[in-house]
Length: 212
Length: 199
Image (cartoon, rainbow over all chains, first blue to last red; front, side, top):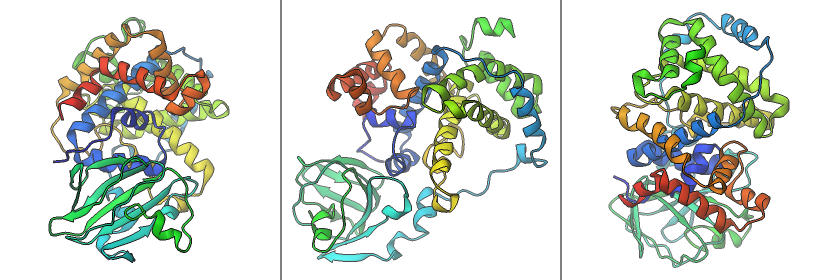
């Protein structure tokens, strides 16, 4: 059971479809495991529908319905009732079946990272996976800009509490923390950094969300 | 369809006319029901497309949404979402999808739009508390009628013009904090925030 949730304003931006892809991914991964937030998003989706219903209406061209009918007539037979393909989670599509076996780059002590920004072409944020070895500690650090994090595996603890799998947390430059991986698994998180940063030389270490 | 036009979705669940029509499309590929949905929702969808800056592709978006409604209607379940909510989420996803495809090739998109933005009822195994979901549409309509104009303006810009809270602040020339507090006040009335506190 997750204990740390996205705030209502972020869920609203999600429901409206205004979030960047990496941010939407963080929210979606949380929603898949959190019935509470899913029901909040259901309400927000209905808000979108009611807003749309209360706006002005714009007449569509007369021939449009006929062209839609000819489009659906050209659908492959049975498409309307085709069973949905077996579903891979977005995480599997992005990262494969075992996130422990990715080409992690050991950074310092217990911390490894993997930059996956290139999986989100055209987005301005940096997207980083971080792994803190089971029982390991990251040095105290703060955050530059705003950093949205979701726990993908294991758990970490800091002075604000324990963050378990699918917990959601947003940190900024006012949050200094010293996370420790708790439990017997490596703790793996996905973070989206709002301020675009360059990963070069010694900066890599400084800009790593765990060690900064 | 004029009787339906006069009281759109004013009743809930089984009685919601649009949800019933959508169910007919899903079960029987009922083209008369499909046409009735088109008459009602296409003008709303065209406004949505124009408001969010897709003017030159507005009709294309409406068409794509309706083709998608036809394809997916077999998955529609009125207990999981009212028709209007379901159609709104399809329109939202179609807009995002069109924008993504204009910007890059599909080879560059390992994750599909629907992997990121869910349509209610798709791939959901959990039992549904239909009453809760459908109640919320009625509650939203009622609550919205009591909200101050300034709050509705902000919400409309977020949902219809697809502006971030920061962009709304810039446009209205008010601080970001003011935009956020207007949204919070509105969401509080809509009981989205109240649910935060029960966590």
